[in-house]
Length: 389
Image (tube, rainbow, N blue to C red; front, top):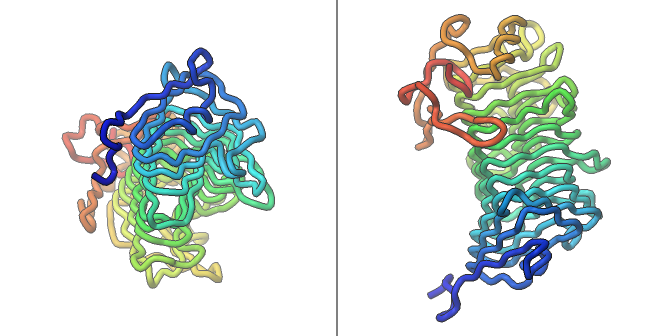
Protein backbone atom coordinates (compact mmCIF):
# COMPACT_ATOMS: atom_id res chain seq x y z
CA UNK A 1 0.00 0.00 0.00
CA UNK A 2 1.35 3.42 -0.94
CA UNK A 3 2.64 5.40 2.04
CA UNK A 4 3.36 2.43 4.31
CA UNK A 5 6.74 0.95 5.20
CA UNK A 6 7.80 -2.07 3.12
CA UNK A 7 6.56 -5.40 4.45
CA UNK A 8 8.67 -6.57 7.37
CA UNK A 9 10.31 -3.17 7.98
CA UNK A 10 9.28 -1.63 11.32
CA UNK A 11 9.52 2.03 12.23
CA UNK A 12 12.61 2.74 14.31
CA UNK A 13 13.51 5.31 16.94
CA UNK A 14 16.96 6.86 16.61
CA UNK A 15 18.49 8.52 19.67
CA UNK A 16 21.07 11.32 19.48
CA UNK A 17 23.10 12.60 22.41
CA UNK A 18 26.57 13.11 23.88
CA UNK A 19 26.45 9.64 25.47
CA UNK A 20 24.47 7.87 22.73
CA UNK A 21 25.66 5.76 19.81
CA UNK A 22 24.70 8.64 17.52
CA UNK A 23 26.53 11.79 18.63
CA UNK A 24 25.24 14.17 15.94
CA UNK A 25 21.91 15.13 14.46
CA UNK A 26 23.39 14.87 10.97
CA UNK A 27 24.03 11.16 11.52
CA UNK A 28 20.40 10.58 12.46
CA UNK A 29 19.19 12.52 9.41
CA UNK A 30 21.29 10.26 7.18
CA UNK A 31 20.02 7.01 8.78
CA UNK A 32 16.33 7.68 9.44
CA UNK A 33 13.67 6.28 7.11
CA UNK A 34 10.07 7.21 6.39
CA UNK A 35 7.91 6.69 9.46
CA UNK A 36 10.78 6.73 11.96
CA UNK A 37 11.25 8.87 15.06
CA UNK A 38 14.35 10.75 16.16
CA UNK A 39 14.94 11.66 19.81
CA UNK A 40 17.55 14.33 20.55
CA UNK A 41 18.81 14.42 24.12
CA UNK A 42 18.97 17.88 25.67
CA UNK A 43 22.44 19.33 25.08
CA UNK A 44 24.05 22.00 22.92
CA UNK A 45 24.82 20.87 19.37
CA UNK A 46 27.16 23.28 17.63
CA UNK A 47 27.66 23.36 13.87
CA UNK A 48 25.41 20.27 13.52
CA UNK A 49 23.06 20.91 10.59
CA UNK A 50 20.88 18.54 8.59
CA UNK A 51 18.61 17.94 5.60
CA UNK A 52 15.53 15.81 6.32
CA UNK A 53 13.95 14.13 3.23
CA UNK A 54 11.83 11.61 5.18
CA UNK A 55 8.02 11.39 5.28
CA UNK A 56 5.91 10.83 8.40
CA UNK A 57 8.93 11.58 10.55
CA UNK A 58 8.79 12.80 14.15
CA UNK A 59 11.79 14.64 15.62
CA UNK A 60 11.67 15.65 19.28
CA UNK A 61 13.90 16.88 22.06
CA UNK A 62 13.92 14.73 25.21
CA UNK A 63 15.18 15.31 28.74
CA UNK A 64 14.83 19.06 28.27
CA UNK A 65 15.16 21.19 25.15
CA UNK A 66 18.27 20.65 22.98
CA UNK A 67 19.90 23.73 21.46
CA UNK A 68 21.04 23.68 17.84
CA UNK A 69 23.55 26.51 17.50
CA UNK A 70 24.52 27.24 13.91
CA UNK A 71 27.91 28.85 14.69
CA UNK A 72 28.37 30.00 11.10
CA UNK A 73 27.14 26.88 9.31
CA UNK A 74 23.78 26.12 7.67
CA UNK A 75 22.75 23.13 5.53
CA UNK A 76 22.98 23.87 1.79
CA UNK A 77 23.48 27.53 2.68
CA UNK A 78 19.80 27.66 3.74
CA UNK A 79 19.08 26.67 7.32
CA UNK A 80 20.04 24.72 10.40
CA UNK A 81 17.49 22.20 9.18
CA UNK A 82 16.11 21.87 5.65
CA UNK A 83 12.81 19.96 5.57
CA UNK A 84 11.97 18.05 2.36
CA UNK A 85 9.64 15.36 3.66
CA UNK A 86 5.91 15.33 4.29
CA UNK A 87 3.80 14.93 7.43
CA UNK A 88 6.83 15.82 9.53
CA UNK A 89 6.53 16.87 13.19
CA UNK A 90 9.28 18.80 15.03
CA UNK A 91 8.90 19.16 18.80
CA UNK A 92 10.85 20.80 21.62
CA UNK A 93 13.97 22.01 19.79
CA UNK A 94 15.78 25.40 19.97
CA UNK A 95 17.25 26.83 16.75
CA UNK A 96 19.76 29.61 17.23
CA UNK A 97 22.14 31.83 15.29
CA UNK A 98 21.42 30.89 11.66
CA UNK A 99 23.31 32.99 9.11
CA UNK A 100 23.30 32.25 5.38
CA UNK A 101 25.30 33.41 2.35
CA UNK A 102 22.16 35.13 1.01
CA UNK A 103 21.42 36.67 4.41
CA UNK A 104 18.32 34.56 4.94
CA UNK A 105 19.77 31.78 7.04
CA UNK A 106 16.86 30.01 8.76
CA UNK A 107 16.31 27.97 11.83
CA UNK A 108 14.12 25.80 9.60
CA UNK A 109 13.84 26.03 5.82
CA UNK A 110 10.55 24.39 4.81
CA UNK A 111 10.67 23.18 1.21
CA UNK A 112 8.22 20.27 0.82
CA UNK A 113 4.98 18.86 2.21
CA UNK A 114 3.18 19.39 5.51
CA UNK A 115 5.22 20.46 8.53
CA UNK A 116 4.14 20.84 12.16
CA UNK A 117 6.40 22.72 14.59
CA UNK A 118 5.46 22.47 18.25
CA UNK A 119 7.03 23.80 21.47
CA UNK A 120 10.15 25.07 19.71
CA UNK A 121 12.30 28.19 20.09
CA UNK A 122 13.77 30.30 17.27
CA UNK A 123 16.23 32.94 18.44
CA UNK A 124 18.82 35.16 16.74
CA UNK A 125 18.25 33.83 13.21
CA UNK A 126 18.14 35.78 9.98
CA UNK A 127 14.81 34.00 9.47
CA UNK A 128 13.16 31.88 12.14
CA UNK A 129 11.18 29.69 9.75
CA UNK A 130 11.30 30.41 6.01
CA UNK A 131 9.28 28.40 3.50
CA UNK A 132 9.36 27.97 -0.26
CA UNK A 133 6.65 29.30 -2.57
CA UNK A 134 4.67 26.12 -3.29
CA UNK A 135 0.93 25.62 -2.93
CA UNK A 136 1.65 21.99 -1.97
CA UNK A 137 3.12 23.21 1.33
CA UNK A 138 1.34 23.71 4.64
CA UNK A 139 2.72 24.77 8.02
CA UNK A 140 1.31 24.49 11.54
CA UNK A 141 3.12 26.25 14.42
CA UNK A 142 1.99 25.67 17.99
CA UNK A 143 3.21 26.84 21.40
CA UNK A 144 6.53 28.16 20.08
CA UNK A 145 8.67 31.26 20.59
CA UNK A 146 10.25 33.45 17.90
CA UNK A 147 12.54 36.25 19.01
CA UNK A 148 15.48 38.57 18.41
CA UNK A 149 15.71 39.07 14.71
CA UNK A 150 19.00 40.33 13.32
CA UNK A 151 19.95 43.27 11.13
CA UNK A 152 20.86 41.87 7.70
CA UNK A 153 20.97 44.97 5.50
CA UNK A 154 20.08 45.15 2.66
CA UNK A 155 17.75 42.17 3.24
CA UNK A 156 15.05 42.03 5.90
CA UNK A 157 14.93 39.53 8.75
CA UNK A 158 11.48 38.12 9.57
CA UNK A 159 10.81 35.92 12.59
CA UNK A 160 8.44 33.73 10.55
CA UNK A 161 8.05 34.00 6.77
CA UNK A 162 5.57 31.68 5.05
CA UNK A 163 5.79 31.68 1.27
CA UNK A 164 2.91 31.25 -1.16
CA UNK A 165 1.69 27.98 0.37
CA UNK A 166 -1.77 26.52 0.77
CA UNK A 167 -2.25 27.06 4.51
CA UNK A 168 -0.59 28.54 7.58
CA UNK A 169 -1.81 28.00 11.14
CA UNK A 170 -0.14 29.65 14.14
CA UNK A 171 -1.48 29.35 17.69
CA UNK A 172 -0.31 29.69 21.26
CA UNK A 173 2.99 31.28 20.22
CA UNK A 174 5.03 34.31 21.27
CA UNK A 175 6.77 36.64 18.78
CA UNK A 176 8.97 39.46 20.08
CA UNK A 177 12.02 41.65 19.54
CA UNK A 178 12.05 41.96 15.78
CA UNK A 179 14.71 43.95 13.96
CA UNK A 180 13.44 45.97 10.97
CA UNK A 181 11.64 42.93 9.51
CA UNK A 182 8.17 41.72 10.45
CA UNK A 183 7.27 39.48 13.36
CA UNK A 184 5.11 37.35 11.05
CA UNK A 185 4.86 37.54 7.27
CA UNK A 186 2.74 35.20 5.17
CA UNK A 187 1.82 34.83 1.52
CA UNK A 188 -0.30 31.73 2.21
CA UNK A 189 -3.69 31.32 0.59
CA UNK A 190 -5.38 30.59 3.95
CA UNK A 191 -4.08 31.89 7.30
CA UNK A 192 -5.44 31.05 10.74
CA UNK A 193 -3.59 33.06 13.41
CA UNK A 194 -5.19 32.48 16.80
CA UNK A 195 -4.39 32.94 20.50
CA UNK A 196 -0.85 34.30 20.04
CA UNK A 197 1.18 37.15 21.51
CA UNK A 198 2.90 39.30 18.89
CA UNK A 199 4.39 42.12 20.92
CA UNK A 200 7.65 43.70 19.90
CA UNK A 201 8.36 44.75 23.51
CA UNK A 202 10.08 47.98 24.53
CA UNK A 203 13.39 47.30 22.77
CA UNK A 204 11.95 45.83 19.55
CA UNK A 205 12.31 47.46 16.14
CA UNK A 206 9.98 45.39 13.98
CA UNK A 207 8.21 46.84 10.98
CA UNK A 208 4.73 45.28 10.74
CA UNK A 209 3.70 42.96 13.52
CA UNK A 210 1.86 40.95 10.85
CA UNK A 211 2.10 41.28 7.08
CA UNK A 212 -0.02 39.50 4.48
CA UNK A 213 1.38 41.12 1.32
CA UNK A 214 -0.48 38.88 -1.19
CA UNK A 215 -3.85 39.04 0.54
CA UNK A 216 -5.69 35.71 0.72
CA UNK A 217 -7.96 34.51 3.49
CA UNK A 218 -6.72 35.76 6.87
CA UNK A 219 -8.45 34.96 10.16
CA UNK A 220 -6.99 36.69 13.25
CA UNK A 221 -8.71 35.46 16.40
CA UNK A 222 -7.86 36.09 20.05
CA UNK A 223 -4.38 37.56 19.55
CA UNK A 224 -2.53 40.15 21.65
CA UNK A 225 -0.67 42.40 19.20
CA UNK A 226 1.47 45.32 20.33
CA UNK A 227 3.43 47.87 18.33
CA UNK A 228 6.53 49.22 20.07
CA UNK A 229 7.80 52.79 20.32
CA UNK A 230 10.81 51.81 18.19
CA UNK A 231 8.78 50.41 15.31
CA UNK A 232 10.08 50.84 11.76
CA UNK A 233 6.51 51.22 10.48
CA UNK A 234 3.50 52.97 11.99
CA UNK A 235 1.12 50.26 10.80
CA UNK A 236 0.63 47.13 12.89
CA UNK A 237 -1.16 44.78 10.47
CA UNK A 238 -0.85 45.07 6.70
CA UNK A 239 -2.92 43.30 4.05
CA UNK A 240 -2.28 43.29 0.28
CA UNK A 241 0.60 45.78 0.23
CA UNK A 242 2.38 43.99 -2.65
CA UNK A 243 -0.70 43.29 -4.75
CA UNK A 244 -3.46 40.73 -4.29
CA UNK A 245 -2.36 37.34 -5.62
CA UNK A 246 -5.33 35.20 -4.57
CA UNK A 247 -8.84 34.95 -5.96
CA UNK A 248 -10.48 35.27 -2.54
CA UNK A 249 -9.30 38.10 -0.30
CA UNK A 250 -10.81 38.50 3.14
CA UNK A 251 -9.47 39.85 6.43
CA UNK A 252 -11.30 38.81 9.59
CA UNK A 253 -10.39 40.14 13.05
CA UNK A 254 -12.29 38.76 16.04
CA UNK A 255 -11.60 39.29 19.73
CA UNK A 256 -8.06 40.61 19.33
CA UNK A 257 -6.34 43.11 21.64
CA UNK A 258 -4.30 45.57 19.57
CA UNK A 259 -2.00 47.92 21.47
CA UNK A 260 -0.24 50.86 19.83
CA UNK A 261 2.72 52.47 21.65
CA UNK A 262 3.59 55.05 18.96
CA UNK A 263 3.47 58.38 20.86
CA UNK A 264 1.34 60.29 18.35
CA UNK A 265 -0.60 57.25 17.23
CA UNK A 266 -0.06 54.66 14.51
CA UNK A 267 -2.55 52.63 12.49
CA UNK A 268 -3.92 49.32 13.66
CA UNK A 269 -4.75 47.86 10.25
CA UNK A 270 -3.91 48.91 6.68
CA UNK A 271 -5.62 47.33 3.67
CA UNK A 272 -4.55 48.00 0.09
CA UNK A 273 -6.87 47.58 -2.93
CA UNK A 274 -9.91 48.14 -0.69
CA UNK A 275 -12.45 47.56 -3.44
CA UNK A 276 -11.36 43.90 -3.71
CA UNK A 277 -11.04 43.04 -0.01
CA UNK A 278 -13.76 42.09 2.46
CA UNK A 279 -12.98 43.19 6.04
CA UNK A 280 -14.87 41.80 9.04
CA UNK A 281 -14.01 43.07 12.53
CA UNK A 282 -15.90 42.06 15.65
CA UNK A 283 -15.23 42.47 19.37
CA UNK A 284 -11.68 43.79 19.13
CA UNK A 285 -10.13 45.90 21.91
CA UNK A 286 -7.95 48.70 20.54
CA UNK A 287 -5.60 50.46 22.95
CA UNK A 288 -4.07 53.74 21.80
CA UNK A 289 -3.73 54.36 18.09
CA UNK A 290 -4.42 57.44 16.03
CA UNK A 291 -7.59 59.42 16.74
CA UNK A 292 -9.17 62.74 15.88
CA UNK A 293 -7.84 64.77 12.97
CA UNK A 294 -4.93 62.37 12.42
CA UNK A 295 -7.21 59.43 11.65
CA UNK A 296 -10.80 60.66 11.47
CA UNK A 297 -13.20 57.98 12.70
CA UNK A 298 -10.43 55.44 12.19
CA UNK A 299 -10.58 52.21 14.10
CA UNK A 300 -9.61 50.21 11.07
CA UNK A 301 -8.27 51.98 8.01
CA UNK A 302 -7.65 51.13 4.36
CA UNK A 303 -4.61 52.55 2.62
CA UNK A 304 -4.33 52.99 -1.13
CA UNK A 305 -1.05 52.50 -3.07
CA UNK A 306 -0.47 56.25 -3.24
CA UNK A 307 -0.66 56.35 0.58
CA UNK A 308 -3.87 58.34 0.61
CA UNK A 309 -6.37 56.91 3.04
CA UNK A 310 -10.07 56.31 3.25
CA UNK A 311 -12.14 55.03 6.14
CA UNK A 312 -12.69 51.30 5.82
CA UNK A 313 -16.14 49.93 5.08
CA UNK A 314 -15.76 47.35 7.82
CA UNK A 315 -18.46 44.81 8.48
CA UNK A 316 -18.89 44.11 12.16
CA UNK A 317 -19.48 45.62 15.55
CA UNK A 318 -18.51 45.38 19.18
CA UNK A 319 -15.09 46.99 18.67
CA UNK A 320 -13.84 49.34 21.40
CA UNK A 321 -10.98 51.84 21.21
CA UNK A 322 -9.42 52.94 24.52
CA UNK A 323 -7.26 56.08 24.46
CA UNK A 324 -7.22 57.23 28.08
CA UNK A 325 -3.78 57.11 29.70
CA UNK A 326 -5.06 55.93 33.08
CA UNK A 327 -7.19 53.17 31.57
CA UNK A 328 -4.29 52.06 29.42
CA UNK A 329 -1.94 51.93 32.41
CA UNK A 330 -4.42 49.87 34.41
CA UNK A 331 -4.85 47.49 31.51
CA UNK A 332 -1.10 47.05 31.15
CA UNK A 333 -0.72 46.17 34.83
CA UNK A 334 -3.13 43.31 34.29
CA UNK A 335 -1.51 42.09 31.09
CA UNK A 336 -4.35 43.70 29.11
CA UNK A 337 -6.94 41.55 30.84
CA UNK A 338 -9.94 43.82 31.48
CA UNK A 339 -12.27 43.87 34.45
CA UNK A 340 -16.03 43.89 34.16
CA UNK A 341 -17.79 47.27 34.12
CA UNK A 342 -16.41 50.64 33.02
CA UNK A 343 -15.13 51.49 30.51
CA UNK A 344 -16.48 48.36 28.81
CA UNK A 345 -19.65 49.90 27.48
CA UNK A 346 -19.34 47.99 24.24
CA UNK A 347 -20.92 44.57 24.51
CA UNK A 348 -19.76 41.67 22.33
CA UNK A 349 -21.78 41.66 19.15
CA UNK A 350 -21.66 40.71 15.50
CA UNK A 351 -21.71 37.34 13.77
CA UNK A 352 -20.54 34.25 15.66
CA UNK A 353 -19.67 32.49 12.42
CA UNK A 354 -18.23 33.60 9.10
CA UNK A 355 -17.90 31.20 6.16
CA UNK A 356 -17.92 28.28 8.56
CA UNK A 357 -15.26 29.80 10.84
CA UNK A 358 -16.09 30.38 14.50
CA UNK A 359 -15.51 34.03 15.39
CA UNK A 360 -16.18 33.55 19.10
CA UNK A 361 -12.91 32.44 20.75
CA UNK A 362 -12.92 29.24 22.77
CA UNK A 363 -9.43 29.66 24.22
CA UNK A 364 -6.94 32.37 25.14
CA UNK A 365 -3.17 32.80 25.02
CA UNK A 366 -1.18 31.95 28.17
CA UNK A 367 2.40 33.21 28.73
CA UNK A 368 5.03 32.50 27.73
CA UNK A 369 3.52 30.07 25.18
CA UNK A 370 0.38 27.97 25.02
CA UNK A 371 -3.37 28.38 25.36
CA UNK A 372 -6.12 27.53 27.79
CA UNK A 373 -9.90 27.32 27.75
CA UNK A 374 -11.45 30.70 28.44
CA UNK A 375 -11.95 30.82 32.22
CA UNK A 376 -15.30 31.37 33.86
CA UNK A 377 -17.23 32.47 30.77
CA UNK A 378 -19.58 29.55 30.37
CA UNK A 379 -18.72 29.54 26.70
CA UNK A 380 -19.62 33.21 26.26
CA UNK A 381 -17.48 36.32 25.98
CA UNK A 382 -18.42 39.40 27.97
CA UNK A 383 -15.94 42.06 26.81
CA UNK A 384 -14.02 42.82 23.60
CA UNK A 385 -10.44 41.65 23.21
CA UNK A 386 -8.24 38.60 23.53
CA UNK A 387 -8.79 38.11 27.28
CA UNK A 388 -11.91 37.84 29.42
CA UNK A 389 -12.23 39.20 33.00
